[in-house]
Image (cartoon, rainbow, N blue to C red; front, side, top):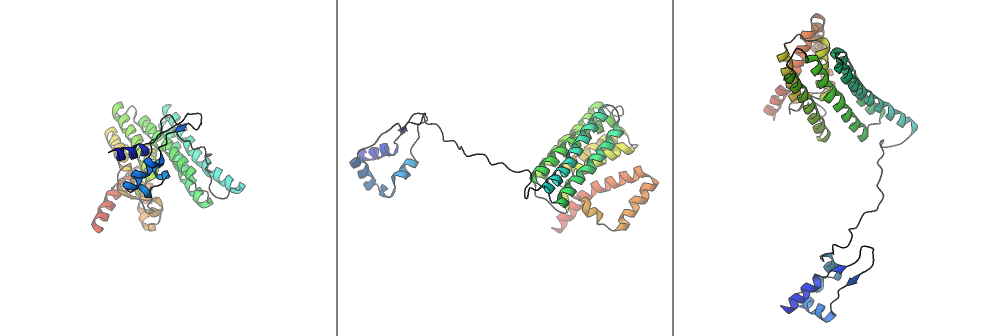
Length: 301
């Protein structure tokens, strides 16, 4: 017991020092008391450094602080020439234009001009698609641009779109019901954008209706003035909000544009006859396509 307690005292050696960096004192055992228990219990293979690694450190000592300088991350990866910087600025100007149009749409909707605000939202959708296309074509895509685009989308499509919808329903629908439907759009848009930022990308389908398309549907609904009862409009807004956070696969616009020309003939003719009815049928068909594709994938898996 004496020998084991002697070795325990040697392992539990505590260094005590002052905070100002002075060396302090150290308790040291005689060599003959240290060597005997090491030989007896087979600790000869451990060095002093390994024993010091398990020693408790006095709380009076200040923790080590990493004083290495922080590394700055460039906003534009790659070659930083004047031409690339101008292209980078142009792409982000489109993103900022989308954001500013969304803010303006909120102000206009608050002034009671819901249709004008809806047209501003449609312009937001156009600039949102333009900045991504320009970034890929000009070779200036960057993580900074992706984050800027996500924040602008939340402002334009997650906040401005619900405000425009609420302004359009004012007077024709119960205030509480319109407020709940608009709040659902904002909440689901935030969830959809956050999930998109952290999820692996699929080149063919979206997971849920994208916020841009949902905002475009809402804006066009207000702009053309669909003659629907208020209850149906509120139910449609709520359904579109839940479609954004669903797991149903929805085809991307680039994939839809590759469809045969005769497929687009019916909507074009229908728009010439009755644009409101045609628009409603196209929206319903797109929303239903997600569950149908999901069932098809489950059967073929």
